[in-house]
Length: 152
Image (cartoon, rainbow, N blue to C red; front, side, top):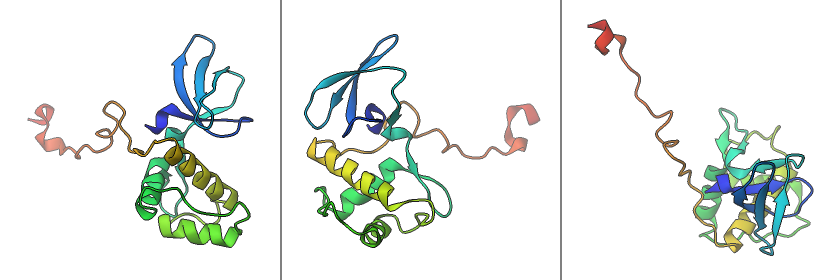
């Protein structure tokens, strides 16, 4: 679901991809439902392509949002816009304890919290990855070379 949700540099909020054309695509704001054209010169990032640094490996954003959803009982996060960096880190540690404290900045945490609230307030609560076959990709069992038809 997050593949269709976009962050567009220079534009506040998040946008849902509506349609694609040859040299542009149409996106709808999750805040005010206004449709805007987006051109190749605009810096656009799909939320489905974002991951969070951890001590071991990067964790996809949908996992972080799912953890927040469980912690907050599918409700928006209640926080002040003047929240302190230490409070942001403490909160995020309850959601993703293994996040890399050196590479994930308080501004990143605040942005993820704001994005989560925007999605919840827009009625988007299913953050799981559901693209064609992507869930099965990478989950294949290792093959024993002696059991392959070529080895027999």
